[in-house]
Length: 233
Image (cartoon, rainbow, N blue to C red; front, side, top):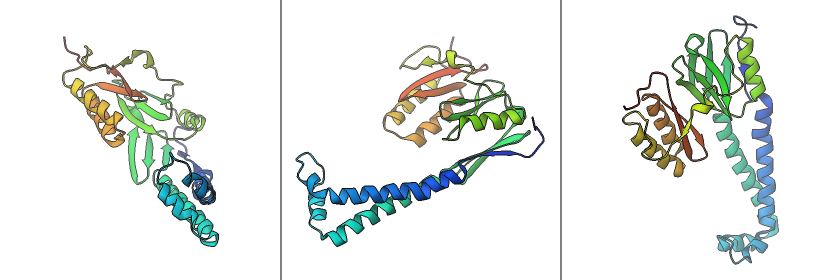
């Protein structure tokens, strides 16, 4: 244990950057070339979308079409790589705090405020003494490395959500919720159904003010209450 030693950083590292800036543009170029090569075949499919575009591509001279398709594929891959780089997650753990960074945003959580840390699928979750979520950070970081980093610095790491059995599937008009939480869960259900991730995240934060902790199973919401939450009589 190195509670007061050098902070441990968990990130995708150089491998992630190689995949983003090398692998994805390469795959994009290959797919772009294949798409151009098969444009004539796709244009003849009666159910294929934008058949006019594929016919136009098929009518171009090969010396222009194939390099153009590869180039467009590489360009799309580079755009995806830039977005992926901007959204990279970096977790820095020390004996006193943890810093969660995604892109240009960063937040710090004090060790003294944290009761337990665990992984919920691809989400790193920190709970406070009230069993409310201090943070829920989604990432593709290796779970083993995250667990080792927190344990090395003396954080209370759990192998699973200690409150998993406390969650209930939310359905409209389910009794037992604090006043006002029902409307927020309805709004959040609509946000999930329409893939409005930012809005769903904001509503999760708002629900936490009512002592309601939410975890998602696809587009279904499960909830539990914190220790201090006051459900209606």
